[in-house]
Length: 434
Ligand code: ATP
Image (tube, rainbow, N blue to C red; front, side):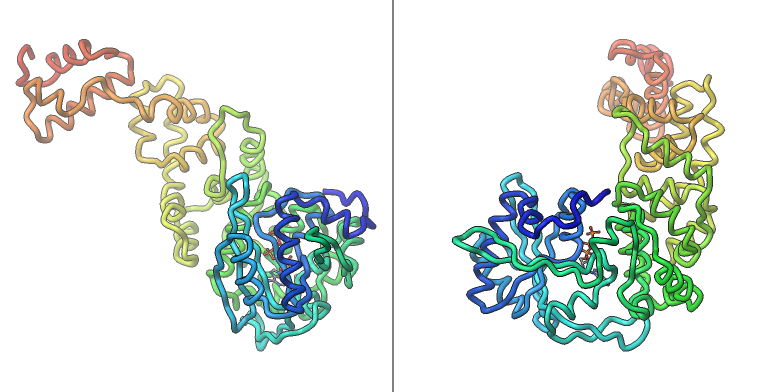
């Protein structure tokens, strides 16, 4: 993602925001003035304006003043909802519905300095001017701010702050930390960094590379809670190219400290490539499918270790439990297998797991996608009530007959209600005519 004009004036950058966002920020700026506070658009959102990247859902605002008080007035002014107010931390969010039905989240935080009492611990914070607030940030490309003003109700830009040369780093593709203790203070910055590097094609500068190396050797990541690491991993799975993030994480030496047993490989790259090149008709991806594809080569023990380490949502634990089974069924999906056989093999798996199988095993892809598209939801022409009407008593036999009838339907032996009724009479003992 190239920065086309490094010296674009801040006013021109703000004009890249959607008009509705500009109007909301103008309201925020005029309220800030009434609060005698200075308001700054800050962090990744400024970076994205420079790169002309698609806007995120969240807009980060730094307030030189009382952020929760400003957020409360702003929510009232724009008909938004005030959330996550932490007076002690000077933070609050305003959630507002935009005209297109989407939700815009404005995160307001009083500008502050942070002090990290020990590696990986949460910081102690104190109010401070915006310049100090930028110093607490992770990378030069995120330590950017544009002052927001309102003139006659219109959004206007004040100064653009770029104290660490973030704009130049975006142009040259450099990932630069702001000070030498940055990763000791917050080791999750390595995970944020690898994500950003993959997204924006950045490379750590020599100082950052050395700091990453030292932080990994010191084992700082192990001092971070599993919850925080998991949050970062989930964000990586929401990137357009989670595979690229993993490739870089491996090159940096990060992967083994976060997911032991996982490593970048040619086979893994090929699987991801198939998902990335999938035409419109192929099963869709999503964070869970990416997770399944990236973890596909891990054995049951490795997968169980991940599930034990991280507080995963149920659907993720379910998927990890199913991955080893996919390896077992893949070679059984031979070309001549009847539909009922395919159904018997694939029915135990979730749609997500089957989507993983589709991309992980090219030889099984056609059968898997046919199963997902056509067979999975195919029903027999008769249901349990129909079978009872035909004289089969409720009980195991009824279940077995329904199963066998569905198999016959899948294999094309039964195509209509009449054929199904005849089939039942032929196959179920005790029915009239059997
Ligand atoms: P994305 O596009 O991935 O949302 P972002 O940079 O906007 O990226 P956020 O997590 O929303 O990411 O954070 C907003 C800003 O807060 C960042 O740009 C950065 O300036 C700062 N920030 C967030 N997390 C950290 C951290 N762990 N250490 C230092 N600064 C951080």
